[in-house]
Amino acid sequence: MNYTIKKEKNCLVVAVTGEIDISVTDSLREDVDRALVNYGVNILIFDLGQVDFVDSSGLGVILGRYKKVAGKGGKVYLAGAKPQVKKVLELSGLLNIMEEYFSAAEILEKIS
Image (cartoon, rainbow, N blue to C red; front, side, top):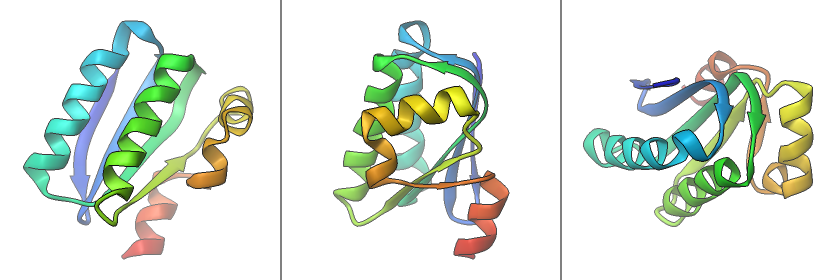
């Protein structure tokens, strides 16, 4: 598993390492959805600081969680994307609908 999911300050923080591609998206999607229900939070942070690559299936997981969380009045934030990942996020349009910050810690400080 190349990701961790934890609750911090009434937020769900998903920290991914390496690549978000077809090899991890099914388990990532299921684990994030389960954690959102189990923790009952409506703020989701994708910590992308250790991500080197995101493919279309990875973008789909992020967008799908955004639709799920935003549909219930919540927010999804993106944190720490490296330049090559940020470029993919920009081209996909995800940065038009989600706020991006330097780090997950910055987001947690902002919303608490």
